[in-house]
Image (cartoon, rainbow, N blue to C red; front, side, top):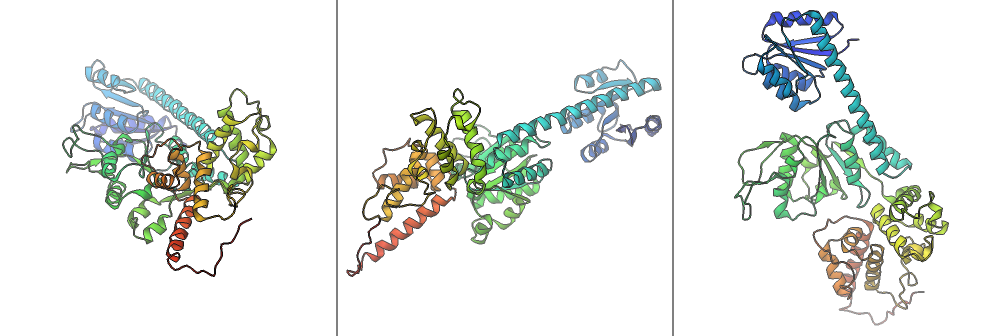
Length: 503
Protein backbone atom coordinates (compact mmCIF):
# COMPACT_ATOMS: atom_id res chain seq x y z
CA UNK A 1 0.00 0.00 0.00
CA UNK A 2 1.48 3.40 -1.00
CA UNK A 3 2.51 5.86 1.72
CA UNK A 4 0.48 8.61 0.07
CA UNK A 5 -0.49 10.16 -3.26
CA UNK A 6 1.61 12.98 -4.73
CA UNK A 7 0.74 15.20 -7.69
CA UNK A 8 3.74 16.68 -9.55
CA UNK A 9 3.06 19.71 -11.77
CA UNK A 10 5.73 20.98 -14.19
CA UNK A 11 5.76 21.99 -17.85
CA UNK A 12 9.17 20.27 -18.21
CA UNK A 13 8.52 16.58 -18.83
CA UNK A 14 12.05 15.64 -17.72
CA UNK A 15 11.44 17.14 -14.24
CA UNK A 16 8.16 15.23 -13.93
CA UNK A 17 9.89 11.96 -14.80
CA UNK A 18 12.77 12.61 -12.41
CA UNK A 19 10.52 13.31 -9.39
CA UNK A 20 8.19 10.48 -10.28
CA UNK A 21 11.01 7.90 -10.25
CA UNK A 22 12.54 9.30 -7.04
CA UNK A 23 9.29 9.40 -5.07
CA UNK A 24 7.95 6.07 -6.31
CA UNK A 25 11.10 4.41 -4.95
CA UNK A 26 10.21 5.92 -1.55
CA UNK A 27 6.83 4.16 -1.66
CA UNK A 28 4.57 7.01 -2.85
CA UNK A 29 2.00 6.89 -5.62
CA UNK A 30 2.86 9.67 -8.08
CA UNK A 31 0.81 11.36 -10.81
CA UNK A 32 2.29 14.00 -13.13
CA UNK A 33 0.66 16.74 -15.22
CA UNK A 34 2.17 19.53 -17.32
CA UNK A 35 -0.12 22.50 -16.57
CA UNK A 36 -1.87 24.25 -13.72
CA UNK A 37 -5.32 23.79 -15.29
CA UNK A 38 -4.79 20.03 -15.53
CA UNK A 39 -3.60 19.96 -11.91
CA UNK A 40 -6.75 21.70 -10.68
CA UNK A 41 -8.92 19.12 -12.44
CA UNK A 42 -7.02 16.30 -10.70
CA UNK A 43 -7.31 17.95 -7.27
CA UNK A 44 -11.05 18.54 -7.72
CA UNK A 45 -11.77 14.98 -8.87
CA UNK A 46 -9.29 12.69 -7.06
CA UNK A 47 -7.89 12.60 -3.51
CA UNK A 48 -4.32 13.91 -3.34
CA UNK A 49 -2.08 14.15 -0.26
CA UNK A 50 0.66 16.53 -1.48
CA UNK A 51 1.10 18.77 -4.55
CA UNK A 52 4.57 19.71 -5.89
CA UNK A 53 4.42 22.47 -8.50
CA UNK A 54 6.83 24.56 -10.51
CA UNK A 55 6.35 28.28 -9.94
CA UNK A 56 7.10 29.32 -13.53
CA UNK A 57 4.58 27.83 -15.98
CA UNK A 58 2.70 29.28 -18.97
CA UNK A 59 -0.97 30.36 -18.69
CA UNK A 60 -1.41 29.35 -15.02
CA UNK A 61 1.71 29.72 -12.86
CA UNK A 62 2.38 28.11 -9.49
CA UNK A 63 0.97 31.06 -7.50
CA UNK A 64 -2.35 30.92 -9.38
CA UNK A 65 -2.49 27.16 -8.94
CA UNK A 66 -1.78 27.52 -5.23
CA UNK A 67 -4.72 29.93 -4.85
CA UNK A 68 -7.01 27.57 -6.76
CA UNK A 69 -6.00 24.58 -4.63
CA UNK A 70 -6.46 26.50 -1.36
CA UNK A 71 -9.92 27.64 -2.46
CA UNK A 72 -10.92 24.02 -3.08
CA UNK A 73 -9.06 22.28 -0.23
CA UNK A 74 -7.35 24.60 2.28
CA UNK A 75 -5.54 21.82 4.17
CA UNK A 76 -3.79 20.29 1.15
CA UNK A 77 0.03 20.86 1.43
CA UNK A 78 1.57 22.52 -1.65
CA UNK A 79 5.35 22.51 -2.25
CA UNK A 80 6.61 25.25 -4.56
CA UNK A 81 9.58 24.38 -6.80
CA UNK A 82 11.80 27.19 -8.07
CA UNK A 83 15.08 27.49 -9.92
CA UNK A 84 16.47 29.85 -7.26
CA UNK A 85 16.04 29.43 -3.51
CA UNK A 86 16.02 33.19 -2.96
CA UNK A 87 13.33 33.95 -5.55
CA UNK A 88 10.89 36.41 -3.98
CA UNK A 89 7.84 34.84 -5.63
CA UNK A 90 8.57 31.54 -3.86
CA UNK A 91 8.71 33.35 -0.51
CA UNK A 92 5.44 35.08 -1.34
CA UNK A 93 3.92 31.66 -2.08
CA UNK A 94 4.72 30.50 1.46
CA UNK A 95 3.02 33.61 2.78
CA UNK A 96 -0.04 32.66 0.72
CA UNK A 97 -0.23 29.24 2.35
CA UNK A 98 2.30 27.02 0.56
CA UNK A 99 3.84 24.36 2.81
CA UNK A 100 7.41 25.04 1.66
CA UNK A 101 9.57 25.85 -1.33
CA UNK A 102 12.68 24.14 -2.70
CA UNK A 103 15.23 24.42 -5.47
CA UNK A 104 14.51 22.25 -8.46
CA UNK A 105 17.94 20.66 -8.41
CA UNK A 106 18.50 20.29 -4.69
CA UNK A 107 19.78 17.03 -3.23
CA UNK A 108 17.54 13.98 -3.25
CA UNK A 109 17.65 13.73 0.55
CA UNK A 110 16.32 17.29 0.85
CA UNK A 111 13.44 16.50 -1.52
CA UNK A 112 12.59 13.36 0.42
CA UNK A 113 12.67 15.21 3.74
CA UNK A 114 10.37 18.04 2.52
CA UNK A 115 7.91 15.56 1.06
CA UNK A 116 8.01 13.42 4.21
CA UNK A 117 7.25 16.46 6.40
CA UNK A 118 4.43 17.58 4.10
CA UNK A 119 2.93 14.09 4.21
CA UNK A 120 3.14 14.06 8.03
CA UNK A 121 1.34 17.41 8.18
CA UNK A 122 -1.35 16.10 5.83
CA UNK A 123 -1.89 13.05 8.02
CA UNK A 124 -2.08 15.14 11.21
CA UNK A 125 -4.60 17.55 9.70
CA UNK A 126 -6.72 14.68 8.37
CA UNK A 127 -6.78 13.04 11.78
CA UNK A 128 -7.66 16.38 13.38
CA UNK A 129 -10.56 16.91 10.96
CA UNK A 130 -11.80 13.38 11.61
CA UNK A 131 -11.60 13.92 15.37
CA UNK A 132 -13.55 17.18 15.09
CA UNK A 133 -16.21 15.41 13.02
CA UNK A 134 -16.50 12.70 15.65
CA UNK A 135 -16.78 15.27 18.44
CA UNK A 136 -19.37 17.20 16.43
CA UNK A 137 -21.25 13.98 15.78
CA UNK A 138 -21.35 13.22 19.51
CA UNK A 139 -22.40 16.78 20.34
CA UNK A 140 -25.16 16.91 17.73
CA UNK A 141 -26.42 13.50 18.82
CA UNK A 142 -26.74 14.80 22.39
CA UNK A 143 -28.86 17.71 21.14
CA UNK A 144 -31.38 15.30 19.61
CA UNK A 145 -33.27 13.58 22.40
CA UNK A 146 -34.64 10.09 21.86
CA UNK A 147 -33.63 6.43 22.08
CA UNK A 148 -36.75 4.79 20.63
CA UNK A 149 -36.48 2.42 17.68
CA UNK A 150 -37.93 5.10 15.38
CA UNK A 151 -35.31 7.66 16.43
CA UNK A 152 -32.45 5.16 16.20
CA UNK A 153 -33.55 4.57 12.62
CA UNK A 154 -33.36 8.33 12.00
CA UNK A 155 -29.85 8.50 13.51
CA UNK A 156 -28.71 5.63 11.30
CA UNK A 157 -30.01 7.40 8.20
CA UNK A 158 -28.35 10.69 9.20
CA UNK A 159 -25.03 8.83 9.58
CA UNK A 160 -25.38 7.48 6.03
CA UNK A 161 -26.36 10.69 4.28
CA UNK A 162 -24.32 13.33 6.13
CA UNK A 163 -21.10 12.74 4.19
CA UNK A 164 -22.82 12.80 0.78
CA UNK A 165 -23.59 15.87 -1.33
CA UNK A 166 -27.13 14.70 -2.14
CA UNK A 167 -30.17 16.91 -1.61
CA UNK A 168 -32.27 15.85 1.40
CA UNK A 169 -36.03 16.23 1.94
CA UNK A 170 -37.06 15.95 5.60
CA UNK A 171 -40.72 15.08 6.16
CA UNK A 172 -42.37 15.56 9.53
CA UNK A 173 -45.13 17.31 11.44
CA UNK A 174 -44.60 20.71 12.96
CA UNK A 175 -42.48 20.53 16.11
CA UNK A 176 -40.74 17.23 15.37
CA UNK A 177 -37.26 18.79 15.11
CA UNK A 178 -36.69 19.05 11.36
CA UNK A 179 -34.27 21.98 11.64
CA UNK A 180 -32.33 20.21 14.39
CA UNK A 181 -31.88 17.17 12.14
CA UNK A 182 -30.86 19.40 9.21
CA UNK A 183 -28.22 21.09 11.36
CA UNK A 184 -26.95 17.71 12.50
CA UNK A 185 -26.56 16.62 8.87
CA UNK A 186 -24.59 19.79 8.13
CA UNK A 187 -22.32 19.53 11.17
CA UNK A 188 -21.35 15.97 10.31
CA UNK A 189 -20.73 16.66 6.62
CA UNK A 190 -17.64 17.80 4.75
CA UNK A 191 -19.28 21.25 4.62
CA UNK A 192 -19.27 21.65 8.40
CA UNK A 193 -16.66 24.43 8.16
CA UNK A 194 -19.06 26.39 5.97
CA UNK A 195 -22.19 28.26 7.10
CA UNK A 196 -25.57 26.72 7.92
CA UNK A 197 -28.30 29.10 6.77
CA UNK A 198 -31.93 28.35 7.66
CA UNK A 199 -34.91 30.06 6.03
CA UNK A 200 -38.63 29.46 6.64
CA UNK A 201 -40.22 29.75 3.20
CA UNK A 202 -43.69 30.06 4.74
CA UNK A 203 -42.81 32.94 7.06
CA UNK A 204 -41.60 35.40 4.40
CA UNK A 205 -44.12 37.27 2.23
CA UNK A 206 -44.13 36.14 -1.40
CA UNK A 207 -43.09 39.62 -2.59
CA UNK A 208 -39.88 39.41 -0.53
CA UNK A 209 -39.04 35.71 -0.77
CA UNK A 210 -37.21 35.85 -4.12
CA UNK A 211 -35.03 38.74 -3.00
CA UNK A 212 -34.29 37.08 0.35
CA UNK A 213 -33.34 33.79 -1.31
CA UNK A 214 -31.43 34.93 -4.39
CA UNK A 215 -30.50 38.51 -3.53
CA UNK A 216 -31.02 41.66 -5.60
CA UNK A 217 -29.02 44.38 -7.30
CA UNK A 218 -29.17 48.06 -6.43
CA UNK A 219 -32.14 49.82 -8.03
CA UNK A 220 -34.00 46.61 -8.97
CA UNK A 221 -37.07 47.77 -7.04
CA UNK A 222 -38.20 50.59 -4.77
CA UNK A 223 -36.10 50.58 -1.63
CA UNK A 224 -33.24 48.52 -3.13
CA UNK A 225 -30.59 51.14 -2.35
CA UNK A 226 -27.72 48.64 -2.36
CA UNK A 227 -26.85 45.14 -3.55
CA UNK A 228 -28.06 42.26 -1.36
CA UNK A 229 -26.43 38.84 -1.55
CA UNK A 230 -29.39 36.70 -0.42
CA UNK A 231 -29.46 33.54 1.67
CA UNK A 232 -28.14 31.27 -1.10
CA UNK A 233 -24.92 33.25 -1.39
CA UNK A 234 -24.65 33.55 2.39
CA UNK A 235 -24.61 29.74 2.50
CA UNK A 236 -21.74 29.50 -0.02
CA UNK A 237 -19.60 26.48 0.77
CA UNK A 238 -22.09 25.25 3.35
CA UNK A 239 -25.73 24.19 3.64
CA UNK A 240 -29.00 26.06 3.08
CA UNK A 241 -32.03 24.72 4.94
CA UNK A 242 -35.34 25.48 3.23
CA UNK A 243 -38.02 24.89 5.86
CA UNK A 244 -41.69 24.61 4.81
CA UNK A 245 -40.66 24.21 1.18
CA UNK A 246 -44.26 23.32 0.34
CA UNK A 247 -45.26 26.94 1.04
CA UNK A 248 -43.19 28.39 -1.84
CA UNK A 249 -45.16 29.93 -4.74
CA UNK A 250 -44.76 28.55 -8.28
CA UNK A 251 -42.59 31.45 -9.46
CA UNK A 252 -40.03 30.72 -6.75
CA UNK A 253 -40.24 26.96 -7.38
CA UNK A 254 -39.01 27.52 -10.95
CA UNK A 255 -35.97 29.44 -9.70
CA UNK A 256 -35.22 26.84 -7.02
CA UNK A 257 -35.30 24.16 -9.70
CA UNK A 258 -32.72 26.05 -11.74
CA UNK A 259 -30.49 26.42 -8.68
CA UNK A 260 -30.62 22.66 -8.07
CA UNK A 261 -30.05 21.75 -11.71
CA UNK A 262 -27.53 24.35 -12.85
CA UNK A 263 -26.12 25.43 -9.47
CA UNK A 264 -26.67 29.06 -10.43
CA UNK A 265 -29.06 31.84 -9.44
CA UNK A 266 -30.29 35.13 -10.88
CA UNK A 267 -30.47 37.97 -8.32
CA UNK A 268 -33.57 40.14 -8.70
CA UNK A 269 -32.85 42.80 -11.33
CA UNK A 270 -29.80 41.02 -12.77
CA UNK A 271 -29.50 39.39 -16.18
CA UNK A 272 -26.27 37.60 -15.31
CA UNK A 273 -26.32 34.26 -13.45
CA UNK A 274 -24.16 33.66 -10.39
CA UNK A 275 -22.72 30.25 -9.58
CA UNK A 276 -23.44 28.96 -6.07
CA UNK A 277 -21.86 26.11 -4.15
CA UNK A 278 -24.43 25.06 -1.56
CA UNK A 279 -26.01 21.85 -0.34
CA UNK A 280 -29.79 21.99 -0.11
CA UNK A 281 -31.70 20.38 2.74
CA UNK A 282 -35.45 21.01 2.52
CA UNK A 283 -38.24 20.22 4.96
CA UNK A 284 -42.02 20.07 4.87
CA UNK A 285 -44.96 19.10 7.02
CA UNK A 286 -47.14 18.68 3.94
CA UNK A 287 -47.69 15.62 1.77
CA UNK A 288 -45.80 16.90 -1.27
CA UNK A 289 -46.96 14.00 -3.44
CA UNK A 290 -50.53 15.11 -2.78
CA UNK A 291 -49.54 18.73 -3.47
CA UNK A 292 -48.03 17.64 -6.80
CA UNK A 293 -51.23 15.75 -7.70
CA UNK A 294 -53.28 18.86 -6.83
CA UNK A 295 -51.07 21.05 -8.99
CA UNK A 296 -49.76 23.09 -6.05
CA UNK A 297 -46.15 21.91 -6.32
CA UNK A 298 -43.99 21.31 -9.39
CA UNK A 299 -43.34 17.67 -10.21
CA UNK A 300 -39.79 18.29 -11.46
CA UNK A 301 -38.84 20.24 -8.32
CA UNK A 302 -40.32 17.54 -6.10
CA UNK A 303 -38.11 14.87 -7.67
CA UNK A 304 -35.06 17.14 -7.49
CA UNK A 305 -35.65 17.67 -3.77
CA UNK A 306 -36.68 14.12 -2.92
CA UNK A 307 -33.31 12.54 -3.75
CA UNK A 308 -33.03 11.17 -0.21
CA UNK A 309 -36.23 11.37 1.87
CA UNK A 310 -35.91 11.38 5.65
CA UNK A 311 -39.10 10.86 7.66
CA UNK A 312 -39.28 12.09 11.27
CA UNK A 313 -41.75 10.36 13.59
CA UNK A 314 -44.37 12.34 15.50
CA UNK A 315 -44.00 12.34 19.28
CA UNK A 316 -47.13 10.17 19.69
CA UNK A 317 -45.31 7.51 17.64
CA UNK A 318 -42.42 7.40 20.12
CA UNK A 319 -44.06 7.84 23.51
CA UNK A 320 -41.16 5.98 25.15
CA UNK A 321 -39.01 9.08 24.47
CA UNK A 322 -41.28 11.38 26.47
CA UNK A 323 -39.46 10.76 29.83
CA UNK A 324 -36.11 11.56 28.19
CA UNK A 325 -37.50 14.78 26.72
CA UNK A 326 -39.17 15.77 29.99
CA UNK A 327 -35.89 15.16 31.83
CA UNK A 328 -34.05 17.33 29.28
CA UNK A 329 -36.54 20.21 29.54
CA UNK A 330 -36.62 20.08 33.35
CA UNK A 331 -32.83 20.37 33.48
CA UNK A 332 -33.11 23.47 31.33
CA UNK A 333 -36.08 25.03 33.18
CA UNK A 334 -35.00 24.16 36.75
CA UNK A 335 -31.18 23.92 36.72
CA UNK A 336 -30.83 24.82 40.40
CA UNK A 337 -33.44 22.35 41.62
CA UNK A 338 -32.69 19.36 39.43
CA UNK A 339 -31.18 16.58 41.55
CA UNK A 340 -30.03 14.17 38.89
CA UNK A 341 -33.25 12.25 38.32
CA UNK A 342 -36.67 12.93 36.87
CA UNK A 343 -38.48 11.86 40.04
CA UNK A 344 -36.97 14.74 42.00
CA UNK A 345 -39.13 17.23 40.09
CA UNK A 346 -42.13 15.24 38.80
CA UNK A 347 -44.36 12.50 40.22
CA UNK A 348 -45.19 9.26 38.37
CA UNK A 349 -48.87 10.13 37.75
CA UNK A 350 -47.87 13.32 35.92
CA UNK A 351 -45.36 11.49 33.75
CA UNK A 352 -48.00 8.87 32.84
CA UNK A 353 -50.41 11.65 31.84
CA UNK A 354 -47.72 13.18 29.62
CA UNK A 355 -47.03 9.84 27.95
CA UNK A 356 -50.75 9.21 27.37
CA UNK A 357 -51.33 12.51 25.54
CA UNK A 358 -51.20 12.61 21.71
CA UNK A 359 -49.08 15.80 21.43
CA UNK A 360 -50.43 17.32 18.20
CA UNK A 361 -47.74 20.02 18.53
CA UNK A 362 -45.06 17.37 19.13
CA UNK A 363 -41.82 18.19 20.97
CA UNK A 364 -42.41 21.95 20.79
CA UNK A 365 -45.75 21.57 22.57
CA UNK A 366 -44.20 19.30 25.23
CA UNK A 367 -41.47 21.86 25.88
CA UNK A 368 -44.08 24.59 26.37
CA UNK A 369 -46.07 22.42 28.80
CA UNK A 370 -42.99 21.63 30.91
CA UNK A 371 -41.88 25.26 31.00
CA UNK A 372 -45.38 26.35 32.05
CA UNK A 373 -45.66 23.66 34.72
CA UNK A 374 -42.23 24.45 36.18
CA UNK A 375 -43.28 28.10 36.61
CA UNK A 376 -46.79 27.73 38.06
CA UNK A 377 -46.20 24.73 40.37
CA UNK A 378 -46.98 25.24 44.04
CA UNK A 379 -44.83 22.42 45.43
CA UNK A 380 -41.33 21.04 45.00
CA UNK A 381 -42.52 18.59 42.37
CA UNK A 382 -44.72 19.04 39.30
CA UNK A 383 -48.08 17.28 39.67
CA UNK A 384 -51.09 16.80 37.41
CA UNK A 385 -52.57 19.99 38.90
CA UNK A 386 -49.85 21.92 37.07
CA UNK A 387 -50.75 20.47 33.66
CA UNK A 388 -53.41 21.78 31.27
CA UNK A 389 -56.78 20.18 32.02
CA UNK A 390 -57.03 18.26 28.77
CA UNK A 391 -53.66 16.58 29.47
CA UNK A 392 -54.16 15.97 33.19
CA UNK A 393 -57.60 14.40 32.59
CA UNK A 394 -56.03 11.72 30.43
CA UNK A 395 -58.47 12.49 27.64
CA UNK A 396 -55.59 12.50 25.15
CA UNK A 397 -57.30 15.20 23.16
CA UNK A 398 -60.79 13.65 23.32
CA UNK A 399 -63.39 16.20 24.25
CA UNK A 400 -66.31 15.85 26.65
CA UNK A 401 -68.62 18.25 28.47
CA UNK A 402 -66.72 17.71 31.71
CA UNK A 403 -63.23 18.12 30.25
CA UNK A 404 -64.32 21.28 28.43
CA UNK A 405 -66.08 22.70 31.48
CA UNK A 406 -69.20 23.14 29.35
CA UNK A 407 -72.52 22.29 30.91
CA UNK A 408 -75.69 21.14 29.13
CA UNK A 409 -75.63 21.32 25.34
CA UNK A 410 -72.24 21.47 23.59
CA UNK A 411 -72.14 23.38 20.32
CA UNK A 412 -69.44 23.22 17.67
CA UNK A 413 -68.42 26.75 18.63
CA UNK A 414 -67.96 25.52 22.20
CA UNK A 415 -65.64 22.79 20.96
CA UNK A 416 -63.56 25.15 18.88
CA UNK A 417 -63.36 27.82 21.59
CA UNK A 418 -62.37 25.25 24.21
CA UNK A 419 -59.67 23.77 21.99
CA UNK A 420 -58.15 27.18 21.24
CA UNK A 421 -58.22 28.09 24.93
CA UNK A 422 -56.55 24.79 25.84
CA UNK A 423 -53.70 25.36 23.42
CA UNK A 424 -53.33 29.00 24.51
CA UNK A 425 -53.09 27.72 28.06
CA UNK A 426 -50.36 25.29 27.00
CA UNK A 427 -48.31 28.04 25.34
CA UNK A 428 -48.87 30.62 28.09
CA UNK A 429 -50.78 32.77 25.61
CA UNK A 430 -48.06 32.81 22.93
CA UNK A 431 -50.06 33.31 19.75
CA UNK A 432 -47.27 32.36 17.40
CA UNK A 433 -46.78 28.98 19.05
CA UNK A 434 -50.55 28.54 19.35
CA UNK A 435 -50.94 29.10 15.60
CA UNK A 436 -48.25 26.52 14.85
CA UNK A 437 -49.84 23.91 17.10
CA UNK A 438 -53.36 24.50 15.73
CA UNK A 439 -52.07 24.47 12.17
CA UNK A 440 -53.56 27.84 11.21
CA UNK A 441 -51.95 31.14 10.32
CA UNK A 442 -51.83 34.18 12.58
CA UNK A 443 -54.63 36.09 10.86
CA UNK A 444 -56.99 33.10 11.15
CA UNK A 445 -56.21 32.74 14.85
CA UNK A 446 -56.82 36.47 15.39
CA UNK A 447 -60.24 36.26 13.70
CA UNK A 448 -61.22 33.32 15.87
CA UNK A 449 -60.05 35.05 19.06
CA UNK A 450 -62.09 38.10 18.07
CA UNK A 451 -65.11 35.92 17.26
CA UNK A 452 -65.09 34.38 20.73
CA UNK A 453 -64.19 37.59 22.55
CA UNK A 454 -60.73 36.31 23.44
CA UNK A 455 -58.64 38.91 21.64
CA UNK A 456 -57.18 40.20 24.90
CA UNK A 457 -55.59 36.81 25.58
CA UNK A 458 -52.03 36.19 24.43
CA UNK A 459 -49.04 38.18 23.30
CA UNK A 460 -50.49 39.31 20.00
CA UNK A 461 -47.35 38.30 18.05
CA UNK A 462 -49.45 37.47 15.00
CA UNK A 463 -46.86 38.11 12.34
CA UNK A 464 -46.22 35.81 9.38
CA UNK A 465 -46.40 32.17 10.49
CA UNK A 466 -46.10 28.87 8.64
CA UNK A 467 -49.20 26.71 8.27
CA UNK A 468 -48.31 23.23 9.58
CA UNK A 469 -50.88 20.54 9.04
CA UNK A 470 -51.23 18.89 12.42
CA UNK A 471 -54.21 17.11 14.01
CA UNK A 472 -55.33 20.40 15.57
CA UNK A 473 -55.79 21.81 12.09
CA UNK A 474 -57.92 18.85 11.06
CA UNK A 475 -60.16 19.40 14.10
CA UNK A 476 -60.65 23.10 13.31
CA UNK A 477 -61.32 22.38 9.63
CA UNK A 478 -63.89 19.77 10.61
CA UNK A 479 -65.50 22.20 13.07
CA UNK A 480 -65.71 24.97 10.47
CA UNK A 481 -67.18 22.59 7.90
CA UNK A 482 -69.77 21.36 10.36
CA UNK A 483 -70.65 24.94 11.33
CA UNK A 484 -71.29 25.80 7.67
CA UNK A 485 -73.46 22.72 7.22
CA UNK A 486 -75.44 23.55 10.35
CA UNK A 487 -75.91 27.11 9.12
CA UNK A 488 -77.34 25.86 5.83
CA UNK A 489 -79.64 23.43 7.59
CA UNK A 490 -80.81 26.16 9.93
CA UNK A 491 -82.63 27.85 7.04
CA UNK A 492 -85.07 24.88 6.90
CA UNK A 493 -85.33 23.64 10.50
CA UNK A 494 -86.95 20.35 11.39
CA UNK A 495 -89.25 21.11 14.31
CA UNK A 496 -89.52 17.42 15.18
CA UNK A 497 -85.88 17.22 16.16
CA UNK A 498 -84.80 18.03 19.71
CA UNK A 499 -81.34 18.92 21.00
CA UNK A 500 -79.45 15.99 22.49
CA UNK A 501 -78.12 16.62 26.00
CA UNK A 502 -74.54 15.64 26.82
CA UNK A 503 -73.49 13.94 30.02
